[in-house]
Figure: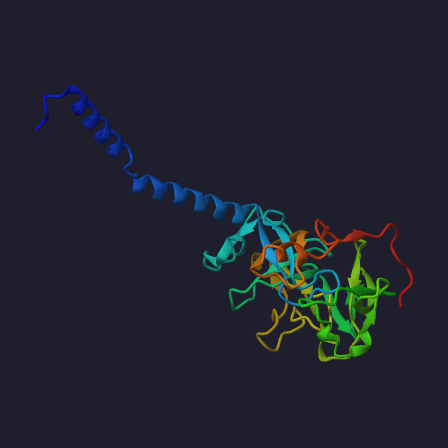
Length: 296
């Protein structure tokens, strides 16, 4: 029923049209959201994803609280490339290639859907053993040179507790307490060189020689005394031996930022908790200009 007043009828029609236009197309909204989530998953799975360091196993090069970018394509793609472990395990690889000595990679535990972060120290076909903490690669000891102790942050995310000795907590040049740790410089056959920590005598300092099967690499943490890696074969805590290449989900590229553990809901803490000097640090190993000849 309409009134005889054209103006009133026109207003009524406009209100009706506006009301009809305000209706939400929920199917289209859901479709758009689904496509966005699929795009994010695809990027995370095939290009790059963020990664968080939860343990001290890669000290001194990676600290608890570091945020990284992990690239997914350097070694091709496989089931472990798919983010959130959505793909079933398998031995397939697409455009597969082999890591290089010194690469920091993301292996998945052989029994659990749990990501680790370790350094590649032996390649398919290599023989590897560890004697008193020193890698013996293809019958030749990998060089380890003593370097001056370095100062690491001493904060809520880096407590220096893994060393078990207060002697490693010292005062830095600026008067602040630091975690001063002894380090060795290790250099692999391709010249990849990096710092490691090995200050304790413990069971994983010795590992009987094995030959790596084809399609497998041997990985170790840079903090050799506190790393559950390929040396840990007797329990499920570590990686239980050489890692199949299809269990490697990517390569660590660089640090985006690092937090000291004091971040809270207070927006100011989002800035004050940032560690200085760690953002945009590359995680690709340096290459020695000349191959070392002396062994320590």
